[in-house]
Image (cartoon, rainbow, N blue to C red; front, side):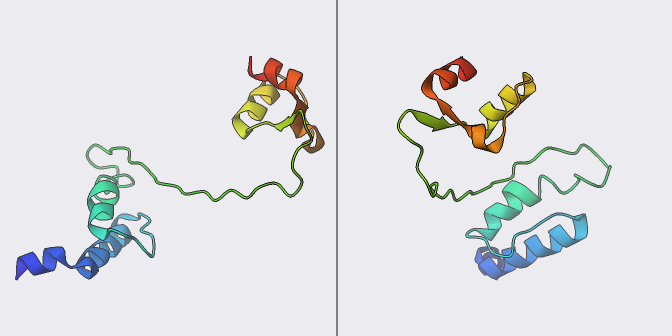
Length: 112
């Protein structure tokens, strides 16, 4: 009887919901593998907010959907990835939204 319960996806979904509710964690409304979510994400994070015992870090999986630009860049122009744009801003260079597309020489200097 227990083997059937441990293999039931609905049982793991309910276990995830109960643990998340009890410990103040986020459990997504849908998952491909509730058992893996329980053991790999929620269970290691169960003491994250409790202040009891040793709290371990845990990973968060994120998916991003990227759309192509409406207007492709002109030949010889590039758009900086966010981390490189922030690096330039940190160095004190002011960038406007319109300035995001750089010439090839500027790009080489920025990331060099």
